Amino acid sequence: MASIQEIQEEIVEDFSMFDDWMQRYEYMIDLGKSLPLIDESLKTEDRIIKGCQSKVWVNAELVDSKIAFTADSDAIITKGIIAILIRAWSGQKPADIITANTDFIDEIGLKEHLSPTRANGLVSMIKQLKMYAVAYQTQVN
Amino acid sequence: MPSRLDRTFAGMLDIKKIRADFPILNRKVNGHSLIYFDNAATSQKPQQVIDKIVEYYTLYNANIHRGVHALSQEATDLFEESREKVRAFFNIAHTKQVIFTSGNTHSINAVANGAHAFVKKGDEVILSAVEHHSNIVPWQMLCERVGATIKVIPVLDNGELDMATYHQLLNSKTAFVVVNHISNALGVTNPVKEIIDAAHEHGAMTLIDGAQSCGHMKIDVQALNADFYTMAGHKMCGPTGIGILYGKEEALNALPPYQGGGEMIDQVSFEKTTYAGLPHKFEAGTPNIAGGIALGAAIDYLNEIGMDDIAAYENELLIYGTEQIKTIPGAKIFGDVTDKAAVISFNVASLHPYDIGTIVDKLGVAVRTGHHCAQPVMERYQIPGTIRASFAFYNTKEEIDVMVQALQRAVNMLS
Image 1 (spheres, rainbow over the protein chains, first blue to last red):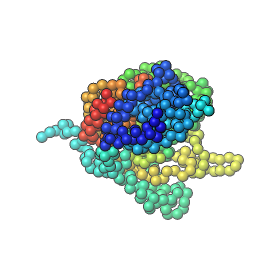
Image 2: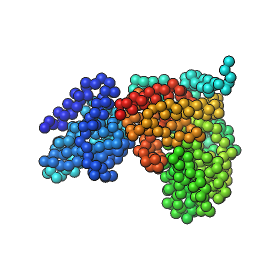
Image 3: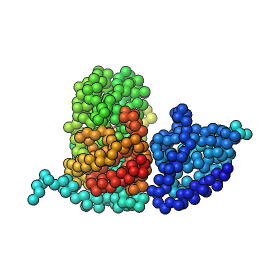
Image 4: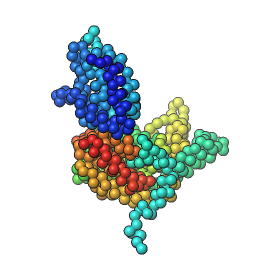
């Protein structure tokens, strides 16, 4: 499996094909449709990421020492954003997720979503995914 | 020759000239000319107000009410002239009933914090289901402190308050009734006169949250007869950080001060401090002097255009905007009544308001999305939030057309 860095570079390359925000958002909406969906029974209060204007649920499981993320959101763009993160980080080792940088979000033209005050909560999503990784890291060791 | 009645208010107000007063309306957002439809959150500022802030710091900056020097006297005079402008604008009897605060939230807290003077253990405080969090939480804090209970006036499907239930809620234990004049989440104008009169019949005090009404309609606090009325300077073309608390003189005298400090005292010794008279009793510390003076400039500006014309024109925008939004298939307006401010709160089919807000922002249209700090309202309608377009007198029907096109484009993208 490709490394987080390689996948993130791939994502940046995919997005570089688009020259306007409209196409980028349309692509994001498409990515949202390919998101590995969280099981409906796991859409519980404790799996909701706080700080988002829309609801985002994330679950993480450890499979063969790697984390498999599933998620969902009631907003389409938010679903696309979490799908991008999960595409890069799902199937990776906890240690690699913990140290992964998030510069690629800026590079794909979604910088405005990185502001901690943005209501979409991308920063909260990143934090939550990394917290799952920290929790599972203790089980891997 | 068309009669005067055939002319639109847009024809009576020189919108082009008005727009030229607001420099921010010239800027581009995401490559598009800004269309600012988030006026319920804060209004934009005319150059006259911006200039006043600069003028104050350039020529008059000094602390007020204390200095014997000329600069301090001049600054004090300007600040107090502003208080007089506020008095006249809201038909307040006396300037000592005009308390400058940091904003509407501060004004409400100043009352709720001292409201143990009116609300005792076992009493009831009535508020409405359409309140902003800032008019819920301070009262919950009060009730926890004194052992009182909150009762809620429900909201009907159309966004109007359930007045029949309100009248049933009133009883001898009702100590305070607090409602907003206009709901920030729905834009619906509440029958505050009826609410105040009924509360008074039961011996209850009243506070009206005027955050959404000030600057959009003529307000006569004496005619309303509210015990307290609160306003936000920044929602009426003034700067942020300045608000107003109005109170009847006897109500303000009965209310203990919220903050202690300089300015609000008469005599201080370690044994006993006596408080200053109104309004200074509630104005501890150095106030927002520049903000207060600039608010006076905002009031001058609004007066020059005329509040009746502003209200009439904004209503015209409301009617047009409502019609146009309804042309979008699946659009549903919350609070679709006639007696309301120029605020349209809506959703389109099952699309998330956040998705639509994000796309229309990219097209230069600033609307608010979310629960609008009024979660109980959203809970009432079982929705995560709404898109809220709120207009001001510097907006135009052409801008509404652009918004509707942007909304349509967003809906196409997201469906």
